[in-house]
Length: 442
Image (cartoon, rainbow, N blue to C red; front, side, top):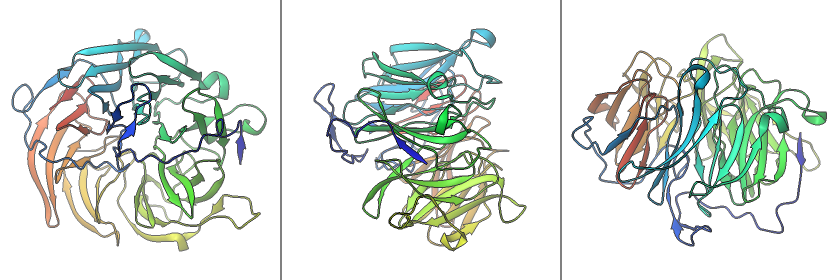
């Protein structure tokens, strides 16, 4: 089900803007580029930069700066500034922080604090989400753990805000997983579990599109079934059959495809018995997804799968279509709870729930090699740049790895304080990684 709440936005045409391309920044009239969302310019965890570091020694070689801000997400970078979600304090005094730092020095530019006014978060699981930067205006969008969805200017001025719990009945969960927004033309897109009134009454993982300038809701959609968990995957945008579409994994165990302009649900692929948290990647005509819950067609835990794109309802037929296994191009037995795959040409690189770094043939799904890095892995995803993988692990170990067809070459291992739960960001010759005690730049 989907519903329009307003028109497409005063006649503006929703133009697709590649995040990797230069765009005019409406707030300053300058060209804007950067690491604008946590998955990077290609929406798959890769950078095209060269000359990136192969070694890093904390406090010494290649270490530019660190700031004492706890966090669990990925910073985003543009126009000489680094934007990040973090948290400060303990127990009843804990607050989330939206902070901005100077890219070169780490000097604080501004910060805003948000108390946890109503949620059931446990174990200080705050700031798992990441901000997203609009390439056209430079505005920054983020969601706090209790469900404030905010738009700020690049200078730190609040432009609009939605209390999703009060307005839409957004639900909170002890695990506190909070996804990041995707920006497409005039729209900023999110999905979250809500339970409200009328057609929004039953709890569902719903998708919402807002006008990125004034915050007005444009459409919402309820394409799934009853949710088992809250969602974490960021929507991925592409073209399919002449439509602008988004793909995302959901809290009801599906991979979804929706029309990004209207909210019309095109198809859903049932994949797991619980919520699926990892973001998908697109490889040619396939959507690549991974999960670590019980499979629907056997009792095994976890799967990576390639789903054929292109399905859509017939004219006059209501969506979404529920796809069967004939749309499955390949599968393998890898499992990841919330770490997302990285796609580099015909290779997929993935950290698994068991703490392995794996290479997969994107055409066949064959697992080419596995290399144990840590006891386990959760949330954090690798990032690729300059023929190297930058790989944070849950136990605070950070690796720089050169992947080869025959196996990985580990160039560096750095043991960081605390846990690594966010993917690294790459921009302008630098790499950022956030740990539970600090944000590092090298």
